[in-house]
Length: 252
Image (tube, rainbow, N blue to C red; front, side):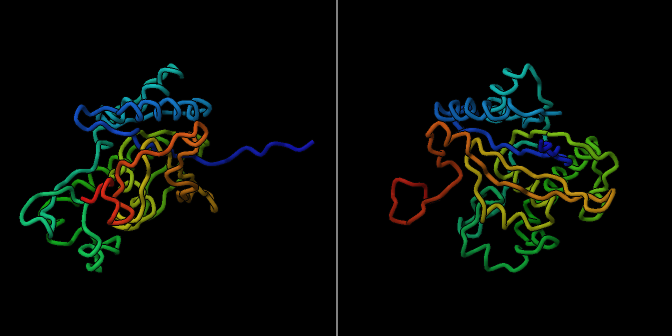
């Protein structure tokens, strides 16, 4: 008789909120369905702790799961959407969220591809983006330390190895910040090269190939299998037109 192998790693689930209604900081009708379908997935897990952004769309997404499991989530200010503003080059002095650039502008700056230099650009400096980034990632590391993993250089010291699963309900921009910190890559690459659909789940797990030295590896990004189970198409939020001629899709 074969034995079931027990996974020996800490699992971090980063959940983007459901389809948003930004006008009331909540969810659309579709977003509420997404949150319900998501809860069917998450309630099957043995979750050590839940954490949520203070914004309504993230808390509403979490509400179905928390209610079904009779659990609460710790609210973390640093999990709110990552939203420092910059003077985007093409907007003639109009401020824009720091991670919304046109491809022809950001890709022409070599530093934006570099983990240790992306924030040195004058527009990032003026917008104090690095200060916000450090605040978010510093709090993130303190949370991981509470769960036994202490940041050391670009890896984590496993002071208390465990099989815990923790779930973070948050937003696309800040999700990319967290992943860029875990992997030590520029967030500009993640902000512009990856898109996690509403209610999607990104999973990172620890690997401890030598005792006491752990690294987080992303095993899945933006998974929406809980939607496909219900034949629910993903929402278009956070995406732009796939072809310029698609006038019904967002261009800017």
